[in-house]
Length: 155
Image (cartoon, rainbow, N blue to C red; front, side):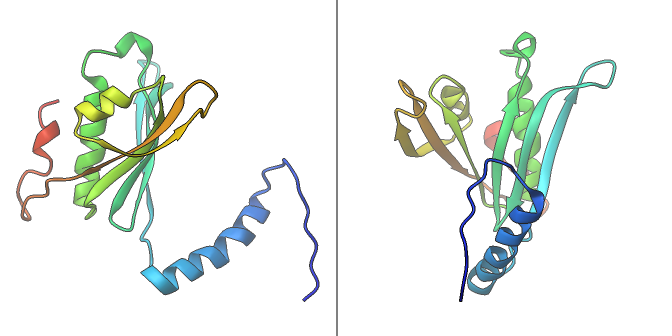
């Protein structure tokens, strides 16, 4: 097979899809379909403008939280806990058994640990002078019809 390699810094959607489709097919052949779905919680101001929220997805029975932003003026008031509780409840409703995410040392590691997350990986000196942490939490799932995640109820 003849081929060439082209390096670029342009994020071309067609190239991404051409790479992603065979990878998804291979993964599905080994682990079944991921049943991936976005999970988004938009936080809006009084004008309807998005001022923060959560961006993630569920697949393979896990919630991946890619982004969480709470405006500085709302921090320390339980807003982040409410957003996380909503995400956890929805993930459990979708059949997830846990959640994972990553955060930088200068961001919210303590916040996530306060919600029951535990570090399972670290990249030291990324970015230089700091670490990047990978955290996970397994949900305490009740039988159908029960409360989903007692550690964040009422948050």
